[in-house]
Length: 193
View 1 (tube, rainbow, N blue to C red):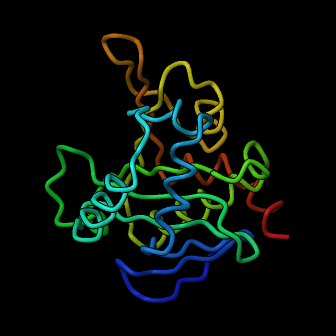
View 2 (view 1 turned 90 degrees about the horizontal axis):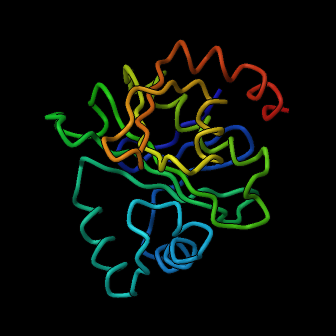
């Protein structure tokens, strides 16, 4: 069970020992440092290094874009990562909060929590919110085909492969509410302690 404070798009979500707070300007340089780390950058669609000016321009753009929303992930008050939701490119929904299918994103920037079971917590909070509150039908993810850790992570959440890109570099995955609930019952119990 998650706790929800506020209303979209400025909603704060808590559960499974973490809190997701709407991304604020005070967070963007930490976000940039994480995003520019080799560990994170190599797994992104664009592996370019982000400048401070680019980060500030991106933040201004996403603040006005209802087709995406971003949160900073906090554990015991400390920022450890970031998560987001985006509408699919071909979706005509007015916002991410009324779409049928959305694409979530996550990275754990703090090395102490990368590969740790706590890395599942922000995803569980976000997916519970998507399925239970927003009534989203499915979540879709696009992952680099050679990113075994992300593919394994998504499989543990209940994702199934939908397609492979023509060049073989990308895998598209999809998960429904039912598949998510079936796959995550054990981990939810563990993180709810």
